[in-house]
Length: 175
Image: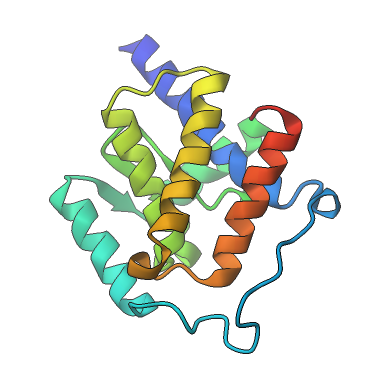
């Protein structure tokens, strides 16, 4: 039990750290131009409200609990401290394959919730806990979100952020 918990905590920290790469070394990433710059939300086929409802329903159907209470805030603060980052940079984290901890400020963000929901499903499938598999998992989730951006209500700004994350992790040669 203790080993399983330790593995879960390691994976949670590892998966959560990736979002930092969007903030760290931002100057080393060349942004891709946005198409339709006048209206960056023009191609979204579902509203953000519908995307949120969809991801919440899917989480419920999969038996994944989403917590955005005081316990979640405390856990995310602890996880950030253990990872050596500022608490506000850790928006959410998965614990195992059935629990997402998310800051209250981000509980209505379909992009953050979708990413974490996809990570729970990776864990359910038995993702290994090592740097190579975590790196692959992070890239895989971002690519899946980019491919499904229209039906999941992902904005062009979020797509650009995910592309920049992928470029940065590839530039570094790992997670």
